[in-house]
Length: 87
Image (cartoon, rainbow, N blue to C red):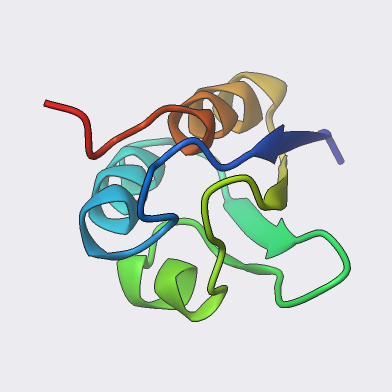
């Protein structure tokens, strides 16, 4: 199963706004993607903003993105790495 490790880029970590953006993108994909905190919580469904928030991933945390399709994994990993709170 394809996976990649990425560092959380959002200043507030994977909280409400970033989690919602990631979940919406994951739900639009034709493959399942999960997120897990390296050495901690997870894996959780990337299509659920509530589950993403339960990870407690702060800025700089290492997150493992895993899924059945490499392109989907790469798309979600890119979102996790971005500062989704930046306007």
